[in-house]
Length: 448
Image 1 (cartoon, helix red, strand yellow):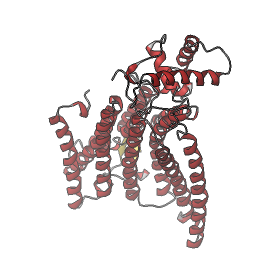
Image 2: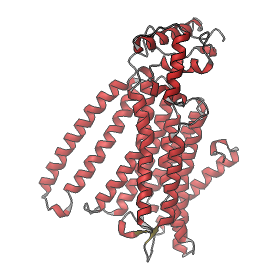
Image 3: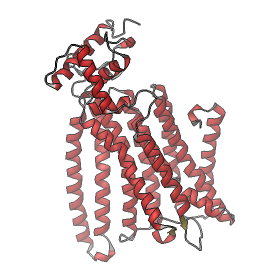
Image 4: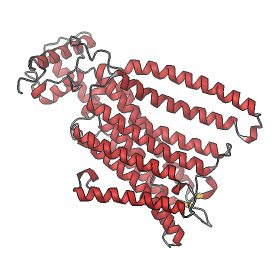
């Protein structure tokens, strides 16, 4: 299939027009008295803003040379627009009493799942090089597709059905309940694959590699946080007694916000040369969002009518939870941000010093004599401070392959066995010295 960003200008205009028509239709339905969260202006405009942000990110990612991430951001934009289009179609069919209304509602009810996978894939692709995708990408795509299909086929609105249902559990019934539960578990576990592998690669690396991979990992973490928020909405419904429609609108806003956060992280990671300030904003944003979910969940239970606590007691307990959880998150994310920040990126004498594009590769495509092109790529990423896992993540190869390349590199560079860290640092120094020798006095390569 062809991504929207690769379509002729007429196709892009048509895709944008479809989203615009869907937004206008949903707002018109709202003005006509059709309630429910599907037509709520806040949720509708939030999804439209998320789609716009993804479209802008797709253009900029393609502009910095990362076409794969740009294409995935385009699909994210399309998925958010599809949510709006399916919502408008479902409202219209239900209102008109169309025989296919149940199918439209089922399709709309599953449209929130693909964006979660696409925002992870976009953030992850931002640090990759080459045309290959890591094994986590097809696994995540297959699992998300399976969950979307299962949700559309097994979950239906209860009868009698008037208007679009909310998140209230009693408004839905699921056929083959064990199959539905298994599909849900599969989807949740699949959403943990990419963040876990990226955080592992980031925390094992050093310098700019750690910062870039860490930012991508934070962007991929937005999807499971959104799922956690969805689960908290169930807690807010019972025992929290929160209005279901309000919670559903909040979920749509969270979905749109998560997509914008993920694409922003993808842009930062793809551009290279990540600054400490950017790392701090991204990491603290992710950590505080998680802390907010914890506070909301605990606060909802504390305020539940069934506990019969007084207003003063509820306020005191919620404030105490906020201070403890929020303070811990602030301190913890601060330490993580400092650990991920590229401490050596500005020191030209350090083995992890980078050029202005954020990658320690010599300009003009020159390589160290005797190394194969692939070995040169491995050495370039090593010079950024990447661990074996970090190199594997960026070059989309296995860690065993990275280890084999490094052994060959050390032999060809004449680095005798000893402390592994020393050989890595010395190899990085050789690479960077070679890079410096291929650059002119203004930082341009001699090939230029």
